[in-house]
Structures are given as C-alpha cells and as structure tokens.
Amino acid sequence: MLPRIHQSNRTRLLNAAIYIGLLSLVFAQSASAQRYQVGDIVENFTLIDRNTNQPVSLHDMEGKIVFLEWFAYWCSFCQAGAGDIGPEIVDYYNDIGGNPAGIEVMHVGVNLQGGAESQTQSFATFYGISLVLNDFDRALANRFQDGGQPIFAIINGVDGSTSHDQWELLYTALGYGSLNAPIQTFRSVIDSVGVAAAAAPMITVQPASQSIESGRELELSVTVVSDPPATFQWKLNGENIPGATTNPLTIPNAQLANAGDYTVEVINDSGSILSEAATIELILGYTDSLIA
Image (cartoon, rainbow, N blue to C red; front, side, top):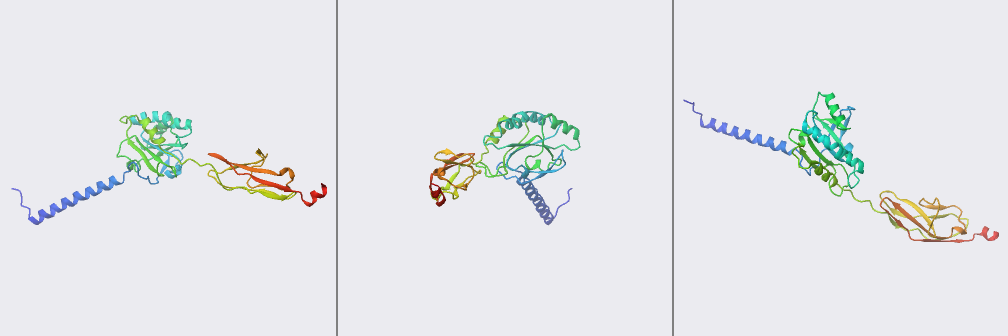
C-alpha cells in the first residue's frame, strides 16, 4: 500500500513541479530569443583566423556583403556546398566586380572541427577557401542554427545601403542537400543589397564676371557640392584651357589674350555639369598704355 501524502506536501510538490516547468519554459524562450532571425542586426563577433592565429571581427568586413559558411571537413554536405560555392559564388562575384551595385562579396569559411588541422587545411585548399575562422565550441554557429552543418549566413556590411540596415542578417540556412536551388537563392539575396547612387556634382556658386587691368592677377572660382570628389576643367570661349584643372583658377599676369567667356566643367564618377559663363574684360593698365 502506497503511503499517503499529506495535503500540504502534495501542494508543495505540485507548486515545485509548476515552478520547474515555468523555469524550463523561460530558459527555452531565452535560448530561442538569442538565435538570430532574418532581419535581425548581427552583433559584432570575433573569431580566430586559423592561418594567422589573429582575431578577425565581423566589423573588419565593413562595406562588404559577408557570406559565412560553417563546415566540418568530414561532412559530405559541407563538401558538396563548398564545391559549388567556390566557382558559383566566390569566383562569380570576383569576376563581375561584386553584386549589381558593385558591392564586394566577402566569403568566410568557419571551421567547426577542432583537433584536425591537416584535414581542415586539405579541405580549405581543395575548395579554395582563403579565409577560415575557427568556431570549435559553436558559440557563434548556435546563434544562427541549432546544431548540424553546413550552416550558411549572409550579412549586409554596407553602411548607407538603400535596401538593408548595416549588419542586418539577410539569410541563414542549415544543410545543403535539402536546400532548393541554393546557388540561385544565395545570388538572389546577395544581389538584393543596394547602395545609393552617387549624385552628379552641383554648382552652388557660379564663377563671377570681372573687369581687371592687364598685368594684374585674375582668379576665377566655383563652389560645388560633390560626393565623390570632383575634378575641374576650365574653358575659355568654349575651348579647354590646357592645364587649367584647379579650383580656383589663377592667372598671375592676365593679358588682353585672357579676355573672354570662362566656364568650368565639374566632373565626378556619376556625371558632370558646366558652369555659367563668367565674362572677363581686360583693360589696358598704365604700363601697357605707354607701350601701346
């Protein structure tokens, strides 16, 4: 015959069971909350470069699209993934100069297997993975997926992107053989990152017309807004002045031949703009009048 449990003891046991259950639920929710979801901002992390033994952080890759690939050398799906990603992602974007917005794609292999240096090196060499970081305890991998390998993650490292926040997680997946058209999916995500198109230069202050005596210094200038920086080409009566590529333009000893209409073409990588004309009138100075 089973012993009777006093009502108060029974109540305490029930309360303890409820407490343990709630505590387990809190821990489970907490672990889940720590896992990144697409759209989250990935915190800066640091792993060790297995070749140099030096720390490498996520923020070291600023300005690039970061493609992380966790692997273990013995994993057949890791081998299949690495075999495709080398030519179809790494070489592909290197050959065309980045994604459609010209953003460099940074491929990073992340090694999950400790104590197997020669096998890991053979894997990295065979598949052409130039940068391999170590994540033996899966502390970083577990922020993206629950166990297993390969794991993939694509992160936007571009500040000022028109499409995504900097360090936003764009994509993550576990496994390779089960993915549907993985290379096309990876490329679609990478190609989605955009940057604001650089603007053509804008002139805010035009060059000013002047009337000066011959023999005096002539200076012409223009005020511009330009990002990236602009270059300048001054013109006299519509023709380029050789070597006149500074702003301001200075002619130390202006003569009658320097009279005319001056314009300047302001140029950057996104376009150019021509200034309004500044009419320069040269008046014979006292010395010149005597010679004449």
